[in-house]
Image (tube, rainbow, N blue to C red; front, side, top):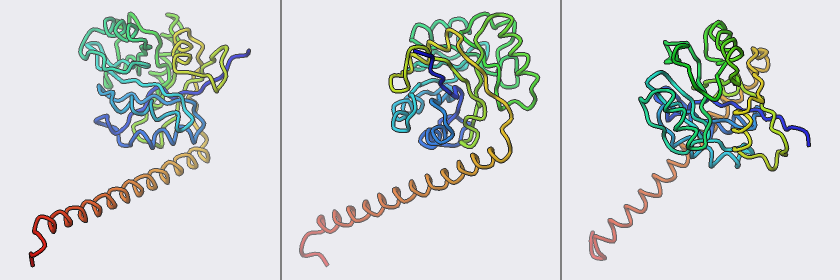
Length: 258
């Protein structure tokens, strides 16, 4: 059986992050629409929405993989495949071991960029993979440096959008070759093992403008539709609550009140 190529964006933030803006449902919908097989919600130091997204993912035709971007003593670290929050503020190496002990994969995001809490080269002594392409960087120099470092020290390289808005999901992604599976049998464990063993390719080229416009325009439309639906649900719930409250008030007043 030939290897299955899987496309995953392993670094995306939802509204649960202090700097994110969109719900996981909208992110999952966008990921499915643009042809990804998985998207990992990696909010800052909170994991509840990522776990929920992983549970919802099969409804969108996606593989569910929970994760988090945890703040270590040495910088930020992506923990993919864990369902509970790693300890915050601990040394990088200890956090990596915690992630492995809990069945996850530890990836260093945007390394060397201290303005974004990237791990310094001198502290990057252990990890399972390096984010060698982050689409949120303003220039390509840090990405090239990360790629050279990963190549020199033998780390698997991954790409992530680091999206904080739904329209940027998938702007960079990782292609992973997963052996001996079909799309129907693919699991999160298969994806995590393939990342760990380095069967990855980075996709972070600049998207052609017409394609970007179409995808981002679609995301905007989906966002408007989503919030319109949520608003309608909330309005209906409020109206129902008002009717129930009125009925209770009448009942308490008794049959002879005026």
